[in-house]
Image 1 (cartoon, rainbow, N blue to C red):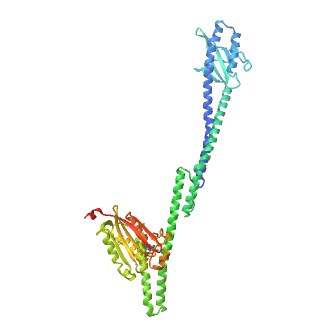
Image 2: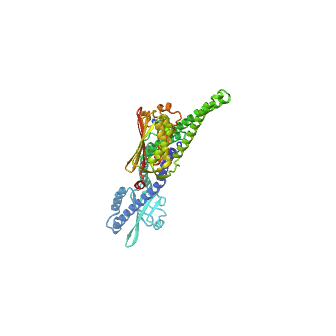
Image 3: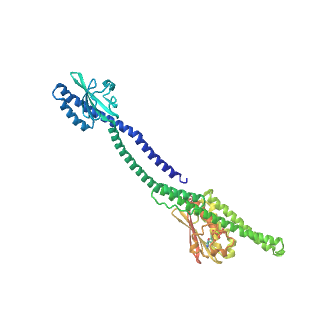
Amino acid sequence: MKRTLYLKLLIGYAIFGILGFLVITIFTSQVTLRCLEKDAISNLYRESNLLAGSYAYNYYQGTITLEDMESHFHSVGTYLDAEIWVITKDGTILINTDEETVPDKVIQNFDISTFGTKYYQTGTFFNTFSEKTLTVFSPVTINYKIQSYLLIHKPASDLVFLKDKLLNIAYITLAIIFLFGFLVLGLFTYTIYMPIRKITKAATEYTEGNFDTKINIHSNDEIGYLAGSLNYMATQLSTLEEAQRKFIANVSHDFRSPLTSIKGYIEAIMDGTIPHEMQDKYLNIILFETERLNKLTESMLELNKYGAKGSMLDITSFDINYTIKMVIQSFEGTCKKKKISFELILTGQKSFVSADMSKIQQVLYNLIDNAIKFSHTDSSITIETTEKNDKVFISVKDTGIGIPKDSIKLIWDRFYKTDLSRGKDKRGTGLGLAIVKEIISAHNENINVISTEGVGTEFIFTLPMTRKEKEL
Ligand code: ATP
Ligand code: MG
């Protein structure tokens, strides 16, 4: 967007100023002049009617002299800033309050019919005035007979002067409005344009994959909200990116090491570095590594299913006590070797839960597998089920190496293995607990861990109890 928004605003502002100026110069000027003319005409006409009906009438009645009338008209003329004439029908001027402008005594070609139906006229009044003049007239009548006309002349330039004075006020007002507009523009620049520029700049950085840029806007309005949302989005994207990077690095590492050793041993077997009688041993190692790769691939596929939210649970009601017993059986061989015994503390005979049985078997398998792996020989693993508030709590507890405090939060992460466990279990992928967590979350249940380094570990998860089945 560069600067276009601001440029548009500035152009809009300039157009507003120019249009305002043009409107006052062309439109307002004309309208004001017309208004002033109308006003002046009606005022002068009222005055001329008054003078014609009183003084001029009295003069023709003989009650006042021409001099009296003239002196009175002089003062009225000065007051009105206009010339007052009394003129006969044939154009002879009886009274002229300002003889300096028009010294003539007779107006040639005077013909009142040129006024038409109007009682006023603008022009030079039969070429008597040098400039445009406004003239209104009132007939002086005695017994319905016109004796003469009373005229009032006012130079049109007086009105133009007045109009210009009024227009100056309009120009000043426009200038003030324009100035206020400028302030509003400044405010807009500060509160809207600058933040939007910041946001746009940050958005450009985001599109280039640079999610570290923070938008520093904290206003309590829509823009502040937008900036906050973008900041949040950037943080989420950066953690996602970081997690993805870490994930790929871990996957590559976990795949590379078994593949390198497989390749190395096969090459050694092929070129005869490993003698025939030793080959069995190394083929077993190759088998071990291949199994590990197989397990890794399966685990990743499993996790991917949960990540994509594509895993559908097949919820049934089953006896968790029985399931636990069945899973334990599959560990018999390993337990014998390590001299590990199981202690089962189960609620009653049966305890029915509503869950996906095969998935819960997998959870139990992973937890018990860990418990055995990280237990010392000649130890015991306790598995306990407890019913509480419509839930069954299942606990798998060992007295093994335990988990260091700092690692407790991390064990759910994909590929995470504590340093303690590395020596004990080379085969582990670090994906087991991540799968456990996904399965329990998919059931909308919880899993917790309590562990003390060197003392032991306990994993406890919940499952919903099936009431109906339980009562059977
Ligand atoms: P996999 O399960 O794929 O064989 P893993 O067992 O190493 O590999 P997880 O089951 O995810 O991976 O466990 C992650 C880590 O948590 C383990 O490597 C270990 O360090 C720690 N851990 C898990 N269970 C226990 C336990 N019962 N006692 C001590 N440490 C444990
Ligand atoms: Mg495990």
